[in-house]
Image (tube, rainbow, N blue to C red; front, side):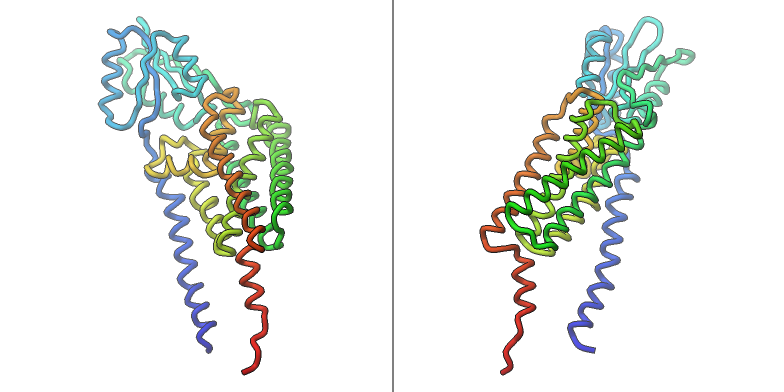
Length: 329
């Protein structure tokens, strides 16, 4: 057996377990360490009445980021603007909990359990869902499940333009066209057919398209810079890191650090956050996610165009070198 096949055999034997370990770490670690970390919540009511409740939340060091509001109306506005996930309104009778299951059903349930456990014995807690999920997705699970297909579509598009050896403007046009069609298709399925989303149809399609474009441009850009390893790196980054770290199924503030922060810096996490904002909150708190996706799309396309000006992608040059016959000595 020659040395080259032997090295390839050993590489496969080592690489597969390494990928399995990476996948288990990326998916299982955040799930096993789910807990509130600086989770923004509100407390509304007179200072004298809310002081004790606020102290209880602050005793759980690092778990909650408490915001004070004068009354229920201000707390509702903060929830609708995505400043907080929910708020406790202290009244003379019993506490009232305001939640937003559209922001995160997991957080809404967590707050309900936390407030109920701290309420005085015999005092029922009235729960009001200020921004509920759509009727087609009452548990909010379908929206979270939609992020992985978008990531896979983006990776597939980025890999395809690299393997098909498209260059320059043709690559950019292919990526943009694929992203637009993917966004429209996803909106037709998620909004028009399943009823999972309940916002502006075209805005949702735009978010879905931008998420796919940011992912595909990132993968293609890495391919243009470093060749086939760049495509593999982009795929691992978007699917094995970006998807489980996105917080789409729970919330970024429930993931261990740095997973929550890193996830929002990658297209799947930014796309999930932006989709929630557009679908349920009229675009509130969408600025950071729009910026993240735009940067990925812009820098990825710029790398593709720069690679074309240098005379082709590294992977193409490498393949040509391998195909060139070596003259007999």
